[in-house]
Length: 123
Picture 1 (tube, rainbow, N blue to C red):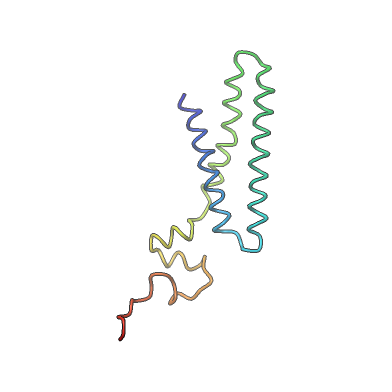
Picture 2: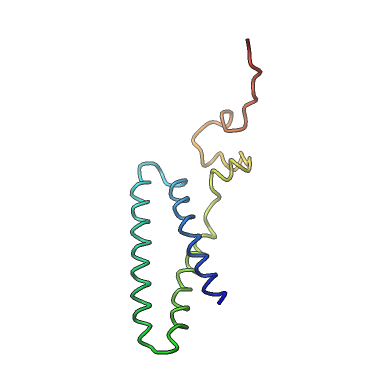
């Protein structure tokens, strides 16, 4: 019972993570196309999962084991692909790791978030 739950959690978490990665990492000119491609990829995955499940039901009483193994394949692939993904610029900003953040931004270090000192109000 825990294996299907784990597979579902990994695939479900990737749905949110993949959208966040595209919106934070992709250049603005390609972002819309990539988000559309991502939606098509998820919809294609739903249809493929349904077809594989339908075809595996023809194997009889042991088909649930093959269905579980078939669903583990994309979960393991997604997990292995996510291991090489860099940290999010928003996370780096929240963690105040400015030196690591600078290669991701196209601004000068002196105007980076959190590096300015607050000025006392005048008047």
